[in-house]
Length: 83
Image 1 (cartoon, rainbow, N blue to C red):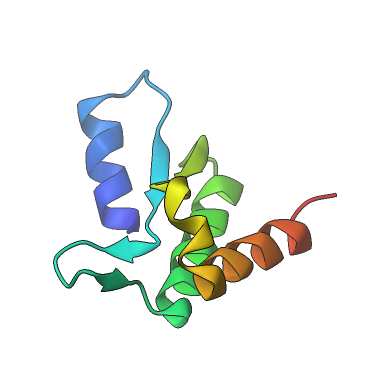
Image 2: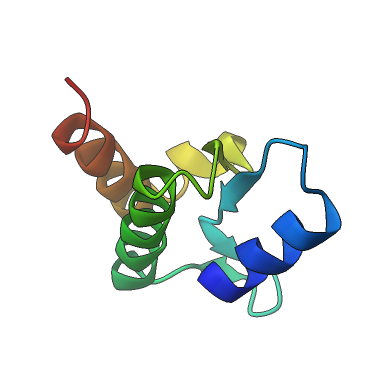
């Protein structure tokens, strides 16, 4: 992930960068494995802390009801990393 963020920063030096969090693998027509969701969130948190990202967005949040484990992983992560 950091490599792609660096590429974006080089192309758009003065623009905020917001990364998407995927809950669904559209190529496999299946939910993203919970471990992968957690890895995405950890990577995003590190990049936000390093001020390389301005934030994140949960993509296809409409799927939260159908992907409960993934949604719970995101909720738990947010709760653990907010004051």
